[in-house]
Length: 302
Image (cartoon, rainbow, N blue to C red; front, top):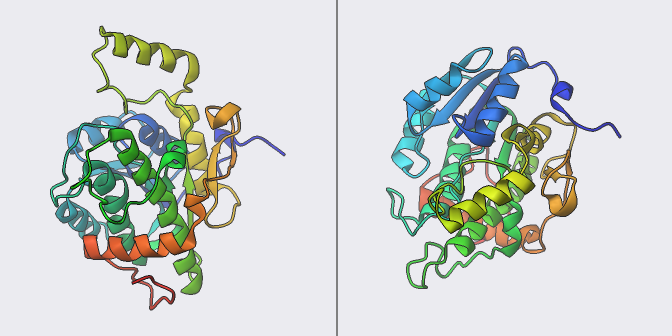
């Protein structure tokens, strides 16, 4: 089997891609690769000036527009402004193990941004999507569980990594249920997911100043173990353009899926629980005030 690489991305002239968090890290590498193959790329970013600066470094037609996934009003405004057909929606933006915080709507910051923001964005844009929805998860999902009794860490003591793991598990359950609903609705759109392995992005920059012991340990681990943003983006690109079925999950093929060429990979037992996926979808609709827009779907958990 031929290894997937940037030169295996087909020509994308005439197609439009939306990449959340496309101004830095894996999102920027993903956007750059899509634009280089001819796609019109829209960077959906919290700070448009940073998005425009990133766009200026890319070849092709690349623009930027404001989107704050931690504010449902911003998500709705973005969806109302994007009126053209979308071939690829890349749900890439995310937070990793920040201190306890809340979104504008009161959700725990990681669950609200990584899952609920993308959930709402996808449902609002779905009538205009005609290709794929790719959601970036993490191998950290394997340590996650969906705590329906306290999704937003309002009663139990906050623990940053379990909160992150819950949000990344939610990304995979979202992909599974989205694909089920797309199939039942007779839609040709595919929902896939990916994880980058260990990539040298800025997600952990807040963990210790560079001169601190924690900062030095982080820098050493990144230098020795992590792959570049460009290599970390390959699973996302594979999930976006490779001939794979809906609900596929892509990641690196190396040791512990930390680095290497992209391929379809497995997921935890919790991430394969269809009943939990349906229940999470129902709860997410209630929390965000958005719903699947392509017809009545059976089997929703209430």
